[in-house]
Amino acid sequence: MKGFFLLALLAHLVADFVLQPAAVNNRKEQGKVSGFLLHGLVIFLLTFLAVHWYGLKTAFLYGVLVTAMHLLIDLGKFLAGRRAKPGTELFLFLTDQLLHLAVVFFCIYLFAPVTPDPDILGFYSRIFPGDTIPALAAGRPWADWAEKRITKGLQVAVIYTAALFGGAILIQKVLQWLTGKRSPADGRMGRAVGILERLILLTLVAAESLPALGFILAAKSIARYQELNDRDFAEYYLVGTLASFSLAFFAGLWLKTILKM
Image (cartoon, rainbow, N blue to C red; front, side):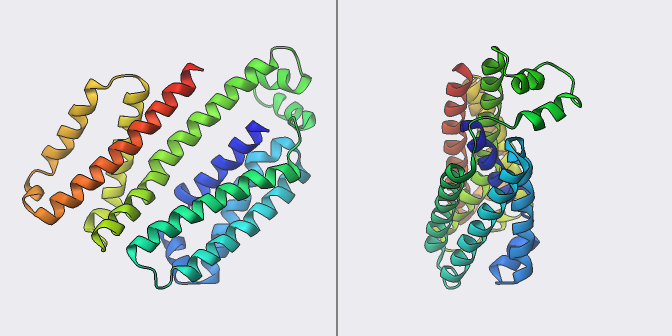
């Protein structure tokens, strides 16, 4: 059950934050059907692929239900946010993600079996080398250990995906809420810098290399030294950096806890 949830959650995070291009998101924000359909197709395919280990019929039905409910939630967000202010956009984003999480969690109880489909595991065991997949398919005693390792790997992937890519959207909404406007720092380069920054900070915290954090923040500040003379930009930059640092720091602590389990 836990593995099913982590796979479905990871599929949602990748579909919503990694594989949703700006062009598709803009179509959704404009209320175009094509934007919703393209996003729904990505959600269904990723969800199906993520949970097909538990049976093709289960994966298909689960994927259809999750996709339909996901699109309904996105449609509701669009209708509620047509005249939304920056603060409202942050609230809508948080509510939207909580609802998606609830859908992923509660739909599992309608479809998820206790264990993966042995026939599907057997199929993959003939393709991929190693003993892990055959052991899971055969239910050998040490398969529990292998399953725990896979579960831990999925938890790590969920933390990194949420902190790096979901965090980029969250921080953008927080800054819009505080400033009441979009900033040039919201562009692709600013987003890429933020993702790389959280990647390094999160990994350093998980590796317990806290003294190195100061060097990362100092290097970023030096690169922006001239722009910090603008008070508005300096405040925007400071809030964005602290928000990104805080997100990466606590995600790193969570990751460190998981790795020690």
